[in-house]
Length: 342
Image 1 (spheres, rainbow, N blue to C red):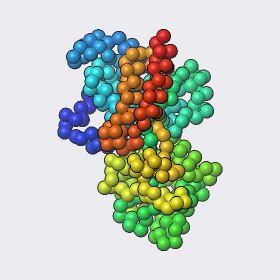
Image 2: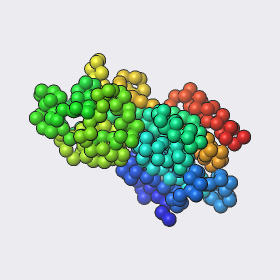
Image 3: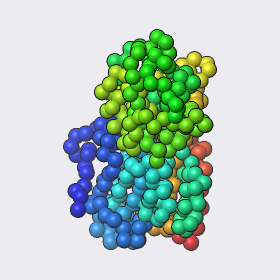
Image 4: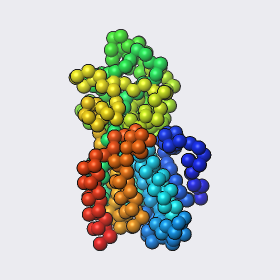
């Protein structure tokens, strides 16, 4: 059995603990990490009242998917598990597509986090396995392009220049991107092809030009941060939260989509200025899992926290949902819970 990870007890601040978790790729916050025998939530939500304060809410919650949503889900779950000691959560960073294909759509997890909407082939896989679900909006992200802070020769890229670096027939040296850049080989770090960030980057920047295979691909965004921080001529992309956690080790580039460079930030992501790399983030709970009260309660808690500015923006680094969006998501969730438990 894996020991409980009590990060706050070790004097680690929320932001520092989230940065550490981002590199771990998996998180078991409370109790022991378990594999559910039925491949679902691993608990019937009945509880035994043995938790602190007589809390009867108990059971395992298994979550996989997007590395971008991982820090937010981890932060919310940390608070929820603290309130409900009988909850036994496991959160894995597998990439949006990896989570859908290998876990969620085959009935192995209760939620799948995603940095882009579920794709038709994933919808079909879920349908083939009898997995029903709903889509919930988690936050808004500013997909961030980063370079080494020592790279004082670059502060921004146009969308076209960004495409020449990452397209399938990509340039090899920086001076091929812009004449005044150094004649040095480009070192690329980015999302693996199972990642929703990879899919979104193709959709918003590359289109039919495709994505180069000449790069260090990973599902662990901290590996991208480490790689770029280690080389003056490196470049990478990932969710804004990972830059937010490493502002001194990385330099975020402004992106020029035609009206001048705009740097990624919570403000530019929320007001629409940071284009085309602002995007919604999602989580998908399964209907079967929502039939378990402990899973339903966590889903409710998650939606409640999507407007929590201190947590979503201050601790993690994403744009919180609006009150209107939260109300819509809450109603969608309550309708689903009523159906699942009816």
